[in-house]
Length: 385
Ligand code: GMT
View 1 (cartoon, protein in one colour):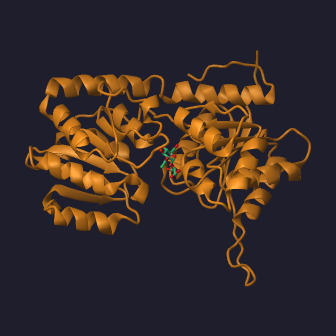
View 2 (cartoon, helix red, strand yellow; view 1 turned 90 degrees about the vertical axis):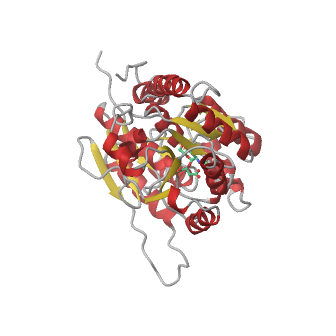
View 3 (cartoon, protein in one colour; view 1 turned 180 degrees about the vertical axis):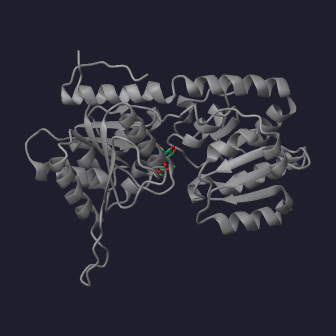
């Protein structure tokens, strides 16, 4: 039987960040699978730098006008969404991060009229746990969650938080984040390792957008405790508002020689496999995509237990889940794995197997395709191999 592939509009924040990565990689893989994918965003998503078959990009202009204090992006986005939906016969708008994308999609669906165009909202994290709870956003966030035709959350934690905080009773499907195990994979690259660890030190890595929620003081303090016991270096990938404080903290603890500041890294998959342990001690983390990427590379993650990481990390087997204030506990976990090569190898293998399996792209892509099919009344289920 010939099944029609849906035409999908995808909106996300185009800059570096997990939700943008997930949305873009999902779009790229949907397109490979035969869907027409129309990215609608304020600039080209950073992972979408080259032309690919079935992928189209529609920029959202934000006109300035003296009366506006800020350009009304939500309205411009709704306009491009509705025009793109009509012109390209879109079946659905799939928005990533509720604020304001789900509101724009709601408006676009009203503008298009009828009930053909569906809206799928994927909740990622601070749209629910922080920003969405601001009094000025709370009612509209709850409204657009209710009004979406389907809602997904990236972890069971985030679904529970959405239900608890917003009192939402509509179904929310958990579809986890995913990793492309062909790109994120273990690699022996002794030259790269020597570049970062010329003295043969162990390598820790932290990668993020360096915001307060990432709990960067803990990254530095755990590194200091580990460095007091064994030779180690810390790679910091990314940049953000907390970076000056991180530099000062590292200097204060005498770690200047042990911390390597990499700045923005476009291809984390090139660097990650050279490392031994990933540190992600966030104050909360609805998923923690970088931890899954680390696992796929055979790097053992030591991750906050506040949030959704328990969905994909088996504590003590494929990584460690620790309270983000438990500096001693995190340092002990790092030392345990670095001091025991057999344990490290076993954990790395198990982590890699889990990441490439249930959290591999084909498994998760199938969940999204099945959701689209159910929503659109298309035949299913289909494979996504
Ligand atoms: O919600 C955010 O703070 C931004 C967002 C992003 O774009 O990186 O991060 C969230 O979404 C990611 C992708 O689903 C998750 O891996 C992150 O855990 C989540 N961030 C937080 O929950 C703090």
